[in-house]
Image (tube, rainbow over all chains, first blue to last red; front, side, top):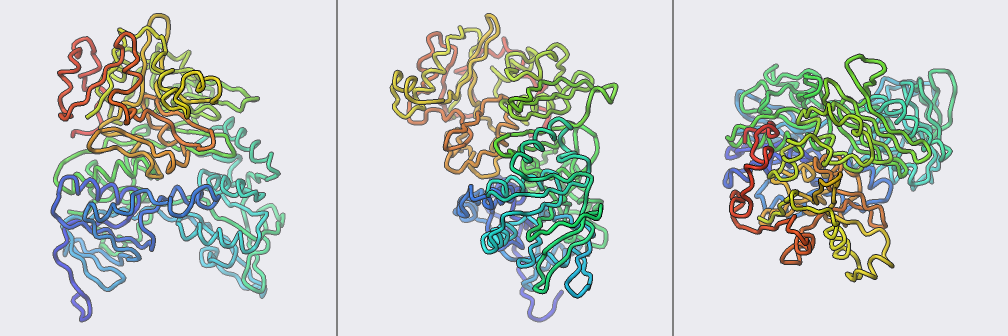
Length: 456
Length: 175
């Protein structure tokens, strides 16, 4: 890497790849400890720290573009962080402690954090053009063709332009999981009718149970939209100008369509470590220890790019959610700056609101006492009010919850799960809408009420 | 750092704290007007009561506030000087992630026009928060000290509170 023309900077201390939840949290946490060293954040994005979960709020028009940033514009200056936008890291050399960017720059690091996040899953679907030529779906996603993913601000901006430019009144979303439904939420608010195509038997099958899925399904169907379950797209057809105009489902049915959002899921983007000669290990996500360190010395990773410890299943897996990304970023930052802090794990949780129905799911929410012997479930269900609350208990401890329609005080359950509180004596009340701190076991209640606070 | 201490053994469940909080966060700031003319003013302090047991609880303004970590819009921030955790209602998009993670359950949904998370703001323009000031039995106590580590002078009841100094619930970070 000593080619002529490559500029070399050798003073850098901390280098962070990624400018979202984990990367920014890490930079902030390093700066609190180390006031002097240089901190560089590299991001392939051309925008500053915008909040990825907010792009659907921008799309629906609920949020102006200038409000999409989760840190003030003065954040980088105040914390003396050298932010380099539109800069992609091409390779990392763990032995030489350097990396190379697409700006032909070699940057040396003292400690490196990989927090580049995830990228969308693009299923293998054939796209057939007007001449009968076939192309893979992943090569046909572009601003003008009517086929989009929705994970970056650019995606949302392009999508918005396309909707306005083509006066879109109907669209299709491939994927009825959380990401698909976040997109659906935005479309429905724009008055766009949807066909939601879901591979499994119901929407939100990974994080919600059947009853919660039914509540959401009925609300979406009220808008005149359709949810096509047990279904997927077989082939997509484009016209003379390269634009999507119809697709064919697996069952042979053809639907005309001018706008398709592919929202099947995201997975950790580990392409950045491909050239590391196996020093940074990844297995469906970068592998880290409890200090957020990868298998290579001086290289850490945090956020959606890693596999992290799930305290409920005991496994390491990808749990791509904002609160954990921030937590992991903070912990990585502290360790990088020399203060050993370990990550005790987390669990999945998410909050969405579909057409006025707020829904929160956490932990192993899908489990049901009627199906698994060691599991107990307590439920409150009011069909008219569209209220559904279900608490999942294993060995007298809460391990999951679904709250639809009435989400108030949801975090009390997160506290019970994280702190592994024995709730044997309060099961009868645990799913009720008025469940509160006062019903909690005395020791834990005192800790919350008169204690100095809690760490989650 | 500012802090409100809850003395549950003194709480009689009168809910005056809730009323004063609502008036404080009303437009008119007048008790009669607020209750007769303004709709759905949310109290940011919450009285829980079963039988003779009751206490008033509001945002604990945590040192490591989970709601700040979970906030996707940057609306929820912790003021490093005062320790106050505040929600900028203009920035909040109403995703309710804060409600999802607050172990005290003290953040509420304000689904009026502003659609934002509603929580204790410590009555920052008051010397003493109104819930504390108007509690008839000192079941809420306020302290404002520069020394964030020492609560001892304001709160010495640790012996009566098995949870207060227990490590049982602090199993996350060896910080």
